[in-house]
Image (cartoon, rainbow over all chains, first blue to last red):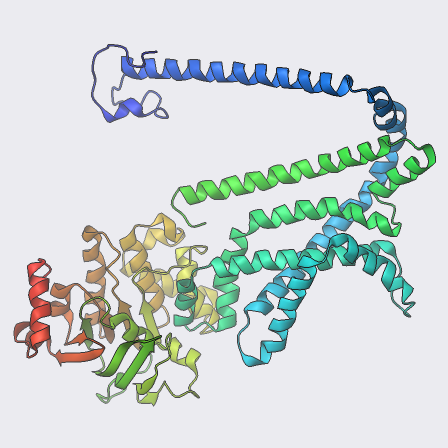
Length: 308
Length: 258
């Protein structure tokens, strides 16, 4: 596997310039035999890699298929979980329910970002006046990050109506949304706080030296940098929120999960759950891809030497 | 380059420090510092690393709280706990060793942030003055660039423009060439020389001894947290009274830095 074949030994920095193509116009650069041989080798290696990957994927798929299909309970499982008939019946209902999940995502997402930011800022406030606020914010994040979401939902969705308070809603969607917001605001507050702390103190020092007050320094110098850095983890939390909107179904709100549930209850066939699950996955994929894209773009920017 | 807002007729010192003491944890960084800076003069702080030059500047700008002693700016005691710290900082410009430009803002926004947000200047006026200053420092084309697209020397010149944009009474320069490649040091020092000619009052911590000798009206040699020697540039560099100063300067000469 000789990489370099004998050719006119040409010394020059251009040899390794793969991106340079034929070089700059007019500099009379002709790729050396050495470079051509290297490129040939690299192309062959890439072809080989693609072939190996394709073969490996095929083998894995076949093995998985055989294992599942040859399982003793497969015919039964196929009927209860992968029934085309029930899938067709469930799909429109699940989609209808999904609209509620999407609305919940947007409303709760916005509320979570605002509340999370307020809590994060409250934790960074200095001065004795703000002491109770700092303590409250810290206690809030500690409590709601530790409390399992499902328990939080049950307390809010089932417990609040039980109080029979005048003027307080018993709508499971509103209460479920509130519970989601409470938990996710705690996560997002921590993300924002980490962002605020990741901004180097010298930035604050520079801002204060210019005469900016503490609040102005936070608003114009620290927060903009903190938020930009935290975009990938924030999007990650939003993806997670998106699928957790399915949990509001425990209060009886008819979202995608509940819609599937109703059909399952009637037919005793679990296919609608599979449909609902796949619909959630389909909804999440664009968002995760978007997150990857944003993260990748920021990494590239950083690699170019910029902080942002 | 920028005329101070109010130029007192008297020669009363712009900055005065008396018996300033500053400790970090167990270590005494400034022991007993006395300093006077007359209007329109340049004071150079020299001394080995860790001798307290940067701390002295940070104390003068109230970025660090002093343990004892007092500091006056234009006759007003700024170390009084009742003094308005933000108001004090508005009158003092600072240029840092690491530039500390705001990476999420263009050069123009970096420069106009304080005039607009702190001094209530309109955007149009702030930008006009910013462009004027940028032009004088040869940065016209960089106004809309982000800091990370600039060379170190350009970034430091932007930092100087940013400090000047609010027409400070006093400019503090903290080893502003220490992070620069040797061939970029000159362009920044040239700017400082220009500021001196225009009468800006400056205090600079520096390792550039040749520059300090050239530009400073007053040179202070810091050692062990005190101003060990204070005098004109000729006196401190030409005929140092203290043995420690002599030793320090000899090491500098041996290193080829003077």
